[in-house]
Image 1: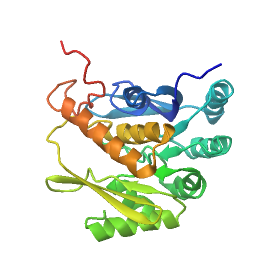
Image 2: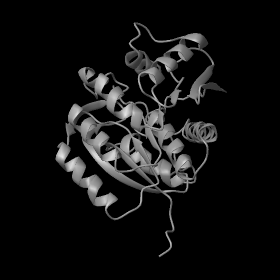
Image 3: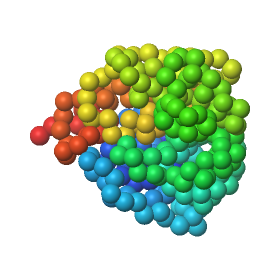
Image 4: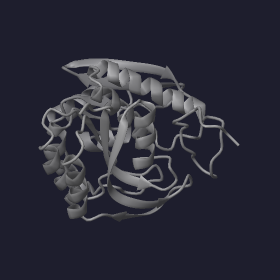
Amino acid sequence: MKREYITVLTIAGSDGSGGAGIQADLKTIAAAGCYGLSVITSVTAQSTIGLTSAYQLPAGFIREQFETLAGDIAIDAVKIGMLGSLEAAETVSELLKSLEGVPVVLDTVLRSSSGKTLFPPEALEMMQSALFPLSTLVTPNLPETALLAGLDRIPATRGEVEEAACRLTRAGARSVLVKGGHTEGGECRDCLLHDGRFHWFTNPRIDTVNTHGTGCTLSSAVASQLAKGLDMTCAVEWGIAYTRSALLAGASWQLGHGHGPLLHLPEMPAR
């Protein structure tokens, strides 16, 4: 039987507001022309204002979700988002070993945008030792990069970002995309370290408060393109371009009273 769709599996937490997590991943995967599958690691109570609480699903149930899907549907790429616990990270690392040759994008979700801890700090070493080597690409933002690289401050200059990316490759990452959304000034500068070379993507900053789920969107977009067979640099370039288009499309709309989501499907009619 001919297979009709390229599939991307997202392993992440659920965001009931639809802006981030599993919900943002699935919308992004669909917009990229792929078919989205999901394994939920945690259920959260959150809105555009912030995250109230999170309920971690048992590691055994995370395994059951994955094995049920993988036993039936071929998986062409994986995106990993919020894991939430050491047990979940260990379980996912074991499960990924069964997907030999499948590209994996690890979005290192450590804290919510409102500052709540979403992954235990004492488990960071395990993330690096177990998940980094299994990941085709790791996509930390600047604060996450500082934590993972063991820095006492967020890298600010081009040289500091490149050195931090090198530290993450020495910690086991094959390729690293340091997302520059937290940089000051009128530009957003993303740095990809791949095959020993640095690739910088510089774009004007988009003036909007609707940034909820930007990291989830970018990592899912890149995973979708890797699933299609694009090389790393082109997949990252496409992912950044798509994320910017979703930011621009949602820059002026209002959903809720805080930091709203991107508009992943811009053809969606407004009221």
